Amino acid sequence: MKAIVQNRYGSPDVLELREVDEPAVGDHQMLVRVRAASVHADVWHVMRGVPYVLRIMGAGLRAPKDLVPGTDLAGIVESVGRNVSRFRPGDEVFGQSLVANLWRHGGAFAEFAAVPEARFELKPAGLTFEQAAAVPTSGSLAVQGVRDEGRVQPGQDILINGAGGAVGTFAVQLAKAYGAHVTGVDALGKLDMIRSIGADRVLDYAQEDFTRSGERYDVILDIAGNHAWPAIKRAIAPEGTYVLIGHDQYGATGHRWFGSLGRFAKLMVMAPFVHQLHPFRGVKDPGDRLVALKELIEAGKITPVIDRTFPLSEVPEAIRYLESGQARGKLVVTVGD
Ligand SMILES: NC(=O)c1ccc[n+]([C@@H]2O[C@H](COP(=O)([O-])OP(=O)(O)OC[C@H]3O[C@@H](n4cnc5c(N)ncnc54)[C@H](OP(=O)(O)O)[C@@H]3O)[C@@H](O)[C@H]2O)c1
Image (cartoon, rainbow, N blue to C red; front, side, top):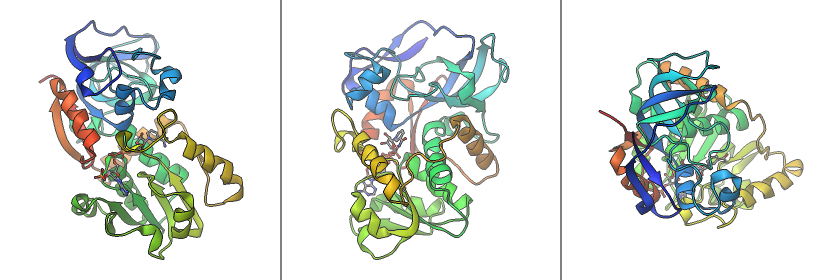
C-alpha cells in the first residue's frame, strides 16, 4: 500500500510517500481502507520529536518507532480482528488509531490502517469522509474542555481563546449547542468565520487583550495559552472555571523538553487553593466524546470546519501549512480516489 513514511525526526521534508506492507491486525483491531485522514498539532509534535519528553513516552528515542504518521481517519472497514463485535466489513467508520497517548505515530496517512475498535464509531450520517476525518482528536478535546472540564451551562458566558483553530471551531459550536453565550478570540482574518459558526462576539487578539477589558467570564477555554494565570484571573468570574488546553504554537513557545506540561503542573499545584481551577476534573472515557460529537453532528448542531484538503502525496505541504498557524479549522488529507 501507499503510505507516508518517516524514518527520522525533523521538518516536513522527512516525510516521504512510499510503498509499504499493509499493517497486521490484532484481535481487538480492524483493518480500515482509509478514505480521509486529518492533521493536528500532535502529529506535528511527533514529526518534529518535540517536546523531547514524547520520545520517552513511546514515540521513539532517536527516531520514530512507528513509521507512518497520523491518528485521525475515516474509511471503510475491510476486515475485523476476532474480538471485534461492533463493526463488520463494509461499515463506514471514523475515529482515532491510537488508544491513549497521542504522542506516537498512528498509521493514518496510508491506504490502510489497523485501528482499535474502541476508538471508532459509525461515520455520522450526512458527513463526507473528509468531514468525518476532521472530527476525532480536535472534536474530543473540545468536548473535554467545554462539557467535561468547563461544565458549560445554558446562559453562561464562555470565552474561547484560539477559537478559529482546529479545537476552537468545535468548541465554539459545542458551547452554542449547550446554550452558552460565546466570545471567540483569534486573529483578525479568522473572526468572520468564527462568527459564522455561531460565536456571539469576536475579539481580535492583536487589538484587544481580554484579560484587561474588565469583563469576566463564567468559563475560559484557553487553547492559545498565551496569558499567565494572574492575567487570566482578572477575566474569570469568582465562581468561574478556567480550562487550559495549551498550545506550543508549533515550536514558537513551549519548553523544548516538556512543552506545556510545566504549566499544567503549576495549575495542578495551585488547584486545591483556587476554586476556578479544576484540572482534568470529569475526565471520562474518550470513546464517549466521539459518541457525543456524532450525536451533535447528526442533530445539525456541529459541522466540521475544513480549511483545505490535500492528497496523500502532499502531507508535507499540509503540515507546513499547519505550522504556519494560518489554518481556519481543520486540514484534511484525502486518500484513494
Ligand atoms: N490539553 C490536552 O489534553 C491536549 C491534548 C492534545 C493536544 N493538545 C494541544 O491542544 C492544542 C490544540 O490546538 P489547535 O489544534 O486548535 O491549534 P490551531 O489549529 O493551531 O489553533 C490555535 C489557534 O489559536 C490562535 N492563536 C494564536 N495566538 C493566539 C493568541 N495570542 N490569542 C488568541 N488566539 C491565538 C491561532 O491563530 P494564529 O496562528 O493565526 O495566530 C489559531 O487560530 C495543540 O497545541 C495540542 O498540542 C492538548
